[in-house]
Amino acid sequence: MKPIVGLIVGAILGLLDGVSAWAYPDARPMIAAIVIGSTAKGMVTGVVAGMIAMRVRSTLIGVAAGLLVGLVLSIIIAASSTTPDGSHHYFEIVLPGMLLGAIVGFVTQRTRLPHGR
Image 1 (spheres, rainbow, N blue to C red):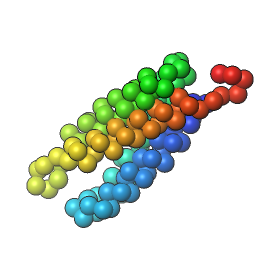
Image 2: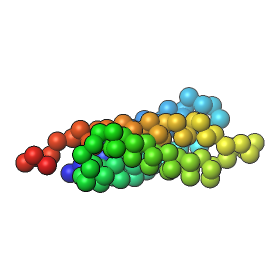
Image 3: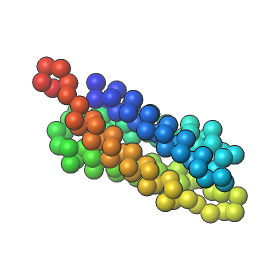
C-alpha cells in the first residue's frame, strides 16, 4: 500500500515539477520531455520511499531516504541533460527533485495502513 501511495504522490509532484519548467523560456521547447521525465522521476522516488516506509517506521529516515533517492535521480538527469550552450542546470533540476523526495518520504511514512500496519 505505501509504495502505491508513494507512486501516486510522486507522480503528482513530479508532474507539477515538470510543468513548472514552463516558467523558463529556454525550457519551453523541451517541455514534453521535461514533464515526462519529472513525472517518471517522481514515480520512482515514490515507490522507493514507499518500500522503505514499509520496512522502517521513522519519519526522519523516510524523509532522508526520499531526499537521497530524489538527489541521486536528479543528479543523473542533470548530468545527462545539457542546454544548447553546453551548460547543465543542476540547481534547477536537483533542488526540486530533493524536495519532491523529502515530501514523498514524509507522506509515505505518515500513511497509516489498515490493521495497525
